[in-house]
Length: 309
Ligand code: GLV
Image 1: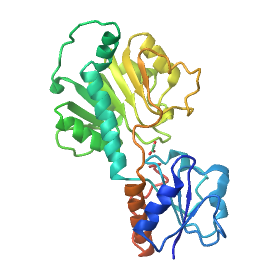
Image 2 (image 1 turned 90 degrees about the vertical axis):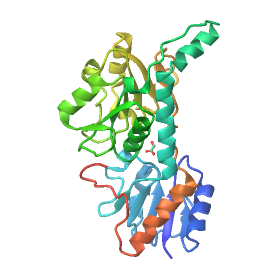
Image 3 (image 1 turned 135 degrees about the vertical axis):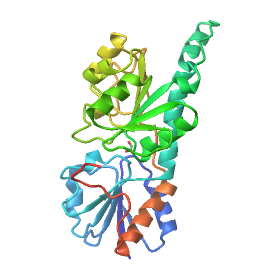
Image 4 (image 1 turned 30 degrees about the vertical axis):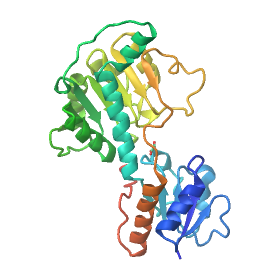
């Protein structure tokens, strides 16, 4: 009987273990810290790996991440030789599509302006652009970025995407490389970051890039706080170079109470909720991975630890 250890500071352990056991009644699910003897634990399902506890599991074979992003598990947290698998869950993808589409439509239809106007009882009509006149640039065209690109393009927006390699997505212009990035930033009214966090993408949203962006553009970061150079964003917004930023992820979480982002008139803050892993569909993905491994088949969505995602 395979044994899986569950550990997360925020995901509900009871709901997850029930969902896992329902999908595989033969799975021995142990919830941290009630692990019992650890020598037979082959699988772990975790958000992060504090205090190096994975190194104390001698039979560990595979670590499943509760998150789509695994940047915080790319160091020595996961012992060498142990596979790392990221979460690809249809509900997580749906949630990200909703968040991104909502924020794009909010900007596209001037909804924040209308909310302010209501507070001041002001009747004023903003021009209504057609979606095809609104240029959206996605940074990252993987599982989440690609899904958002398809949805926004389906709504009629003019969508382009930048990624490490070029992707074939109908109706979406895909570019790569430094020139591709400059082109995408210069053309886009709304730039959305859904990149994995790697050595190449850390700090990618910085002053130099903001100067390349179209004046008054909106930035949406639903990836990682470390993609963004926070002071550069404050300067770009202060100079009016960028019009607005929607931020869901931060360098320090929870965002400190005295952080300038909380009360900035041109920043929308959400508490890392763009999309949450769903225990039902997430458990299905994990059990599928365990069954593949038990059958000596490759586990889907394994991380290439050299590449970083
Ligand atoms: C959340 O940020 C995730 O990586 O799923």
